[in-house]
Length: 144
View (tube, rainbow, N blue to C red):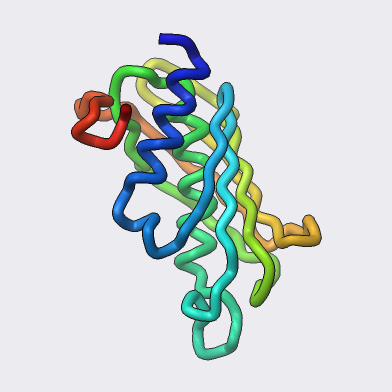
């Protein structure tokens, strides 16, 4: 299997996850990088009229997670920890998170991600640690 085939399988796995039916994100994976775009909808708002932090977390974690997953072609990766910094609210347009791997060893990866609005302004950033699991990448987890 080529790297490009692996990236497309990861994108299909992401699209097939039940949670993504609600958020309707799109994803693009490349070597050590991933980009997640989520269109803003009023259903994501908290009482203050802006997107709730859980959607920020989802976009940032997903981008970092799949950046790491691009480098692991045999097993599912797990998020071990994630730190998040909110810098600006958003209430329209789309959210785009770009994740990249900044460190890797045999059992530990560190990835960072930045979230921007439709005008390219940073609205949040995060970083996390990720580890390979014992769950094989297979059609059972949507990797096909």
